[in-house]
Length: 232
Image (tube, rainbow, N blue to C red; front, side, top):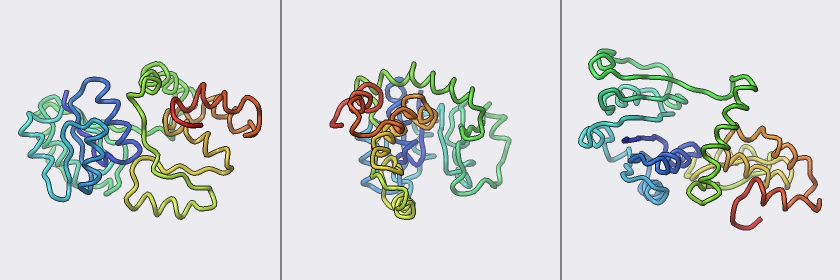
């Protein structure tokens, strides 16, 4: 399938590129600078577009349309996404950074038999989050173990520097910008980076945050469950 992800150098976008590639999809991505476009290619995107200078709608149409689009921009992108989809295509909306209100010609849905759906994690009950975490462990974690999935962390900030972290997010960050309350939380935050928000509430992370960094089992826990490869 042809998969398009917007804001592709965000934490979600960089992960989505790698997961889609691991599943065998042809990956298309949009980003806001030529440097970020190159990051998308390095992560596995077959086609990466600078949305400031290139038209993703025409590019996807020339390829037959996208079968699946993951979007967090919203606003005017919604209608453009519908135009970029192939017949029977699906649009998954997970945020509305450019606004949740927009005008649409819904006849496009009928003629192309499109599916538009939305998803958010925060408001879901704990048992559903646990089910999703188990699915991540079963279906995605093996790719972490063999190196196919390595979501980038741009920079970590202590909680006291949250304003600086938000400023970094609004600038040229690539991947995740996690916060940590204590120095050891900088290591525990790797679980969020690797396993995603559903995994962040797991027993392992709670154990890590309760384990002093000088505890004999601390590094063993990190190596076993949180950070696969690299230096601990």
